[in-house]
Image (cartoon, rainbow, N blue to C red; front, side, top):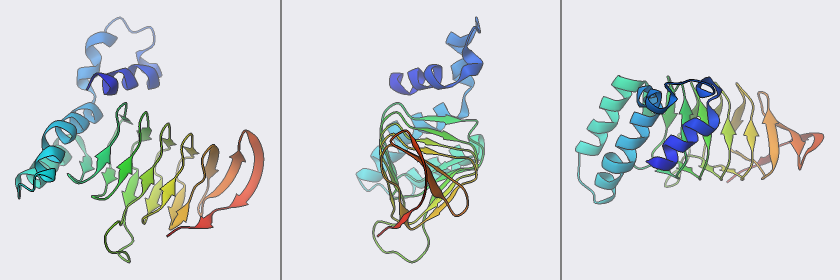
Length: 184
């Protein structure tokens, strides 16, 4: 939990110079959603307790506007800024030190069995309104621009992706204009 709190301080400029920043983090809905997921919903789901993990997920959705399926795997230092409208599917995996803004979907296409949702690497920023669908892989150190749409296309590490459909705008610090490659 402390790494998730540190992620809020590290990523939210609204806390800079704020004398109340030490206590203001308790008002962040993303923190509530992550804590309930990490310490209640996901562990109960892993030991195959029925109903309760999904109930907790739906309660948090009602209270925060953030829906995290109990099966999702989320690394430490995860920060959801604002959060309203965030959906994280059941087979999604999110690496360490990732940031996600409001109205982001990590969802499925309905065409896959088993692994249906994205796998996100470490140190990934996903901009507002982005949609990532299917069992795709997003590398580490990636920035996904606001309102980008990625469906069944993998994203390599160390790049910036923008647009609908998304394309690579920066790769290893250099400007490029590349199409994404088909995923699984």
